[in-house]
Amino acid sequence: MDYVRFHAQLHSTRPAVTDLTSGRSWTYSEFDLFVATCTSILIDRDTSRGDRVACLAKNCAEIVALHLACARIGAIFVPLNWRLSVSELQYLIEDCTPMVIFADELGDELEIQTLDIRELVDMCGQAEPVWPAPPSVDLPSLILYTSGTTGNPKGVMLSERNLTEIAINSTLLQEADERSSFLCESPMFHIIGIATSLRTPLFCGARVAISDGFVPERTLARMADPELRISHYFCVPQMALALRAAENFSPDMLGSLKALFTGGAPHPAPQIRAWLDDGISIVDGYGMSEAGTVFGMPLDRALIADKAGCVGIPTPRVQARIVDEDGNPVPTGTPGELQLKGDNITSGYWRREQDFQNACTKDGWFCTGDILVMDEDGYFQVTDRKKDMY
Image (cartoon, rainbow, N blue to C red; front, side, top):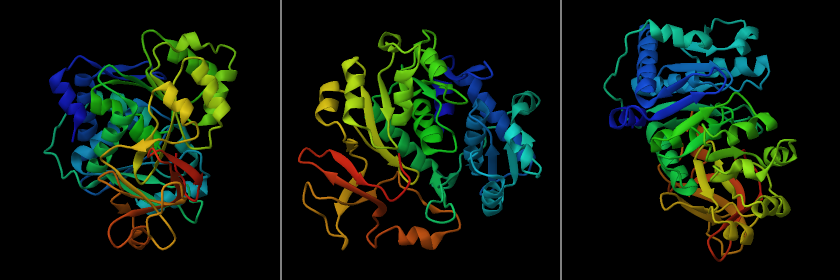
């Protein structure tokens, strides 16, 4: 399910990736070549199917290329949370036992051997591109570590089938297409950064602009840039509030924005309606590392106002039910645990098979541990949170 390769062959000169930190840009043909040379570098380092490739770096195009290169050879990409302490990072590295670690200046304190990701573009300039035969789409190609709020972090394994399904669900809910332009600021060690904000535009043949972090005034300027024409941006409600408080904020500067997508925390109705009053759709959603995008609100501002506080509906590709403590479906309007089925659901936890079995019912439903309620129109709302999600 190599959509970069597909779009490179279908419309090679279409803009694909812009790195706002380095100033580099790639068309789909150019980025496909970048991934192919990254693939060559990994193979030269004896990286093969099932091997892990870790990365500790702020958002950059090189992370995307490395992840897609891993997928092309059946290796597993492991982006590390650079917000963690050195001891916490060492635990993750010992757990995933990577064949190689790429890092920027964040890797200086690790006291282990790393490759400088900032030199990757130059390294690729000296490598011969390779396009190996595609491996099985059911092999894991990504490990995302949970935050560890209930013990040591668990490595959520996602296959190319999972990631493609997440991209399809995101595309449907976010009304993305080849004309879309995504601004990716969410860290790429998180499902929003590495999947929702990247896999969705690449699946559609759209463009993604990569930022190394959120700075409200700078973010607004980039969203207003007529060259970037940003249509999709993802943030938590606190970030949305910071955007409105920025000195350069003006609703008129966001004319290209199709919607502002939020999640990860309760979103007060007055804050939602402030955006709606400015003529901007602010779209709440729900997802998690184990499933990617699950629910999303419509982009219609009247519906958003009517259902303020809801996280939306699933696509037809995701099965969702709410059950009581005994696993029985509850009536409409009754809170209960959300359980999910679909090809977007993780294939398991890295080296934690029993934990994954414990998270699934005997008939194959994934137990999220989150308490939701569904109204008479089929819209879901979060009422209690027991696990990390967005």
